[in-house]
Length: 353
Image (cartoon, rainbow, N blue to C red; front, side, top):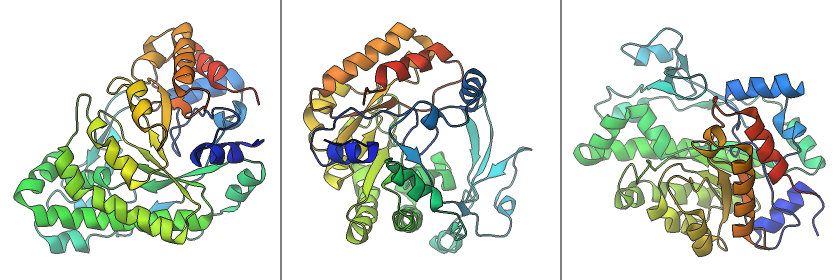
């Protein structure tokens, strides 16, 4: 029987029975606490790292990248003061409650040709990053989750949602060039992360809205699915031992069979407001590890500690004696969440090892 979290996760992902059902307060490789919740954590505990303090089963480490052009502002007509730019040159400014909503500025909104798309700089990976934390986590028995990119989500962030959706009909060659560019960088990031020693490559690609897909399942299968197949094929060819995690919010029930067929190892979140975890787990739980999640939209912020504990118990029962699931938040825990609900989740989810 596995005695460490890394071995325990491997037992789960290989189709066996783990000794305990893994849990985390994070969302794959990304923090599970919004900044206000992180401050509450520090005030209540005096600690710096939630995963360490709560004895979570996973640790996180991600490579860093930078914008490879000269000045990201040059690609934008107007931006708000205080806007920051990510590795793609996408602008982000606060648009709501701290830690919940931001406004994005698409740098390729004005592009009119495939040549302009192809000429735009892809991110540059930081070659000088210190990788020693990965080995230290693994020596302590923890699997390491690392951010490894996006395809659909990055594509529309670069172009703007309305323009991107219009392009799929009016300018398909431009759409395909953009998606190909993004997928190629995600391939590079995934391979570099695997080379660095990351155990689980975490991809983030929200394809759903609250009641259905953002684009039709047929269009997703035509434009996005082949690119994911390309990325995963490259990873498996060079690093067959590395595992993959896909986060995709919203109602994506129509493409869950496709995600399973692509061979992702873990799917997050099976969003409680949008899909029936019991039904999805019953049909696919033996072919992919599903995250059994507590709603960050409903239960965490508006439930009671008893509601949280009851939901954890129900999810454990649904996952059965095989413990086939990972307990975690459905997304970042929102600022209005009572701290008592966070503690209730940890107390109910944390296994006796």
